[in-house]
Amino acid sequence: MEKQQLIRDESFEVEQREWKVRQRKERGKQLLTIVSPIFLLLLWEVLSRTGILDIRFFPPPSTIVQTFYDMIVSGTMAQHVGVSLYRIFIGFLAGVIPGIIIGLLMGLYSPIRHFVQPIVMALMPIPTLALLPIIIILFGIGDLSKVVTIAGSVFFPVVINTAAGVLNIDKIYLDVANNYQTSRRDFFFKIALPGSLPVMLEGIQMGQAIALLTIVAAEMMGATSGIGYLIWTSYKAFLLPEMYVGLILISFFGYLFSLILRALQNKLLPWR
Picture 1 (cartoon, rainbow, N blue to C red):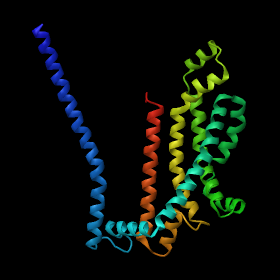
Picture 2 (cartoon, rainbow, N blue to C red):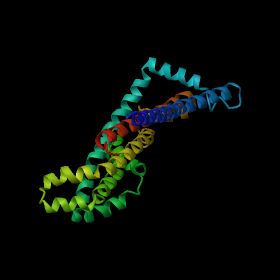
Picture 3 (cartoon, one colour):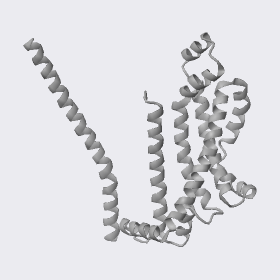
Picture 4 (cartoon, helix red, strand yellow):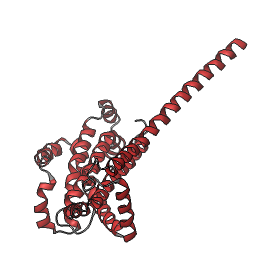
């Protein structure tokens, strides 16, 4: 008994040491993710201050931070960010919801897939931004044209990934559903929708990145506010600190939205 107890104690100590080693490695990785951007900013600051980088084109990060603060105090920041987030949110939903519905129908029903797929494949290669002049003519220069542009850009990756997710469901689940004569409602909510979620969420992840790219370009044409408008007008006026503020905002929101969608994915798909 004492020998078995010693073996268990040694095994426990080995597991503890391995756990501590894994923890140190994880902390090291987390530290690197924090250090790398700080190092880049410090290097940028030093190169700008020493004149190696032309401050007309690469103002020091400290100047950009001061500009960011001034824009917050003046209320300019809230105006541009609020307008862009509103357009992104509405346009994203307007593209994702129809994309999911049509994608599920394409995956579940062969006639619908054969009818819709050629249209999707024909329209998908056309950049939505190339249609922006027509969209502005049809929907004006207000928020609606920006929302339609974003929705059109988001729709295609979502519908294609959702349909692919349904079609890639393991055949064994379909056989079980057929053997037990599952109702259409149960088949949809218990097999088709959960089975397509992994690939569908990847399409939604792509869609949010495309939405951010689209809003910047859309707000450069026929807009009077928004982050894209801020970037474009600052560039034309050679107010580069303001331009960099806009670029940093887009980068920040892209990272934030990606984290939110990843957290949602972990919640909905714990087995992955």
